[in-house]
Image 1 (spheres, helix red, strand yellow):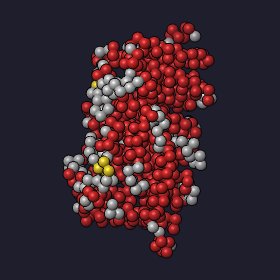
Image 2 (cartoon, rainbow over the protein chains, first blue to last red):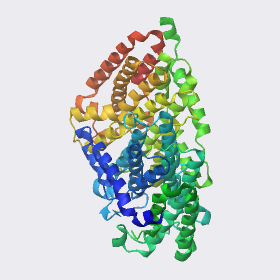
Image 3 (cartoon, rainbow over the protein chains, first blue to last red):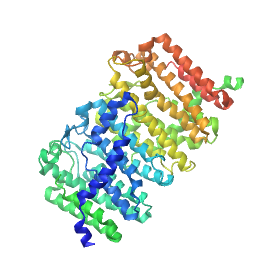
Length: 303
Length: 303
């Protein structure tokens, strides 16, 4: 195991799956009528704006713990990435975080206008469910499994998950938050979708209930660590390093772990979360190696 | 049949189903955490803002042509109404139609702010798919049927349907449209979801392919008629009668049938569409009576 670990290149691993997902999305996201060309342009602009495709990598690597037929994962991974993209487009809107830069490029509403950006987000959100419920696109996945995947996806990303977290985040701007609120925001705004990615791999890989629970718990821990690291980077990096405006959280008095605990303690909390996550994987042997490497990558990334 | 027709009260019929759907939604749409109470408030504000629940009535009445176990329709009808509500909230936003009045009440963003209104719309959209993919909420519907319903729902309401129509509508503001564009907008912005409602009733009622196609075609015709009547009412009614700002289409140079054909010819087009729709129902006998009455109601309504 140690030798495999030394030869494992996490960036190559992420890029390998990113290419699968990007190629699938590139042929699927096409305009069906000249009247919506501009909408498709706006959707594609943000979908192909240089996202690292961390979530697809998480889905594939969780799936790989239980099964090896990776092709059937791709439409689901693509759907998750579309939903993630919609959440970024809406989050960047002037009425929300009001960010004009993401991954070094102007945000969607800066390029296409607010109205189109709202619609592009709506269309991407809807398309993610279109993909997950399509038997034509997923001929090798049983209807019961598709429904479980789609239903848990909706719960993880709706008012009881991601959107609920975004709402609490919006309300907490201006310094109006405590520890409890910060925990709620992070668990829901970022961690809920990441945890779902891990659970999704297990669902598609026919894991038993324990396997699904383990992956979900692993995902909750690294999802929260991911958000804490993101908040630390916002404080400690330049705009050039981030590809987006640095210290924007500070300017808006946003609810973050560093704002409550300081940078050093926040780093320790993130480390603890990663260690807890690792211990969950102890029973899964070498098949879980990519997951561990991904978790390390998440917490060590400088960008 | 004639005597049944004379005794049939369409308003009572619509209200009967509206109560079923409202009661279901009232118990389902509840906050699960104090942190999202304000989001739930915003969602409920628009869901219970006095909508007529025409779409649920269309779903139940299409279902009734094929089957009689109406209880299993309710979660699906509720999901469609949530999606319809999200589309109104986003459509009213300043970056879209910029309407501050709907059904005689201030629009969502006027009451809760733009950021919350965007999130409430996102949450309602997501919740509609959460409901449609939940086996717990739909124990009497087969997984294959649920997937067909959810997948066609996504197609009818995404970039290839409703959102695509809203995009074309947004782009056509300012008089930049022709007959072809107006047809595209109306077929997608309004008619796609209404046609889906009719098809959904047939899907849930185990209709054969011909039955589903007939209902879809019936829906496309009355959906388009519905939108044309709406555009005519916008021109010929006062704001008090409409419960929203009258002549707003005219002010924005919006793409409408009356703008291209004038009011009288638009009325004739709507009548023709209704007649075509009626002829499709000829083979379905008395079971289709509620559908016919609904279609008449749609075109005759003064509000």
